[in-house]
Length: 148
Image 1 (cartoon, rainbow, N blue to C red):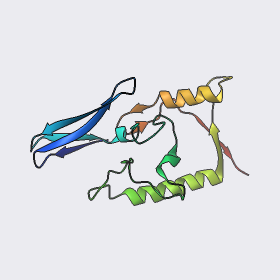
Image 2: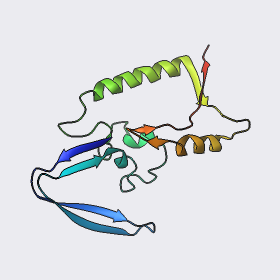
Image 3: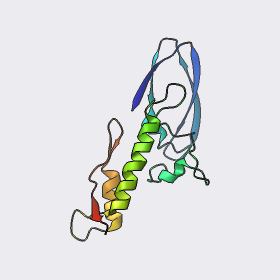
């Protein structure tokens, strides 16, 4: 989700870029008061300055060794005073739904063609995704087998 903001006072903003060889360059940009700025929230989730392997699916990267949420580097619900008021509800609802699914069904990736390997399924599921309002799964298939 792109979050629009308006700059309230003249500001000098530091930012960092890097080239394909990994060389880092530090810059500053002057932003005039009244300018419109857009925060690219999904880009924060794949920022190589926070994550060693930003393109790998590793949900546990957002919790520490005690299982507590690491706030820095994750902006899925925005951050600060104006963060999403539905965050807690969404978290509770997600846990309830996932708990029910895992209790009721055995889940595993499902091939879309005969002989498709686990690595081929991973490639298909990860690299066909697109970024719309949020990360939208691509050619994703999942098998549900009712537990007895």
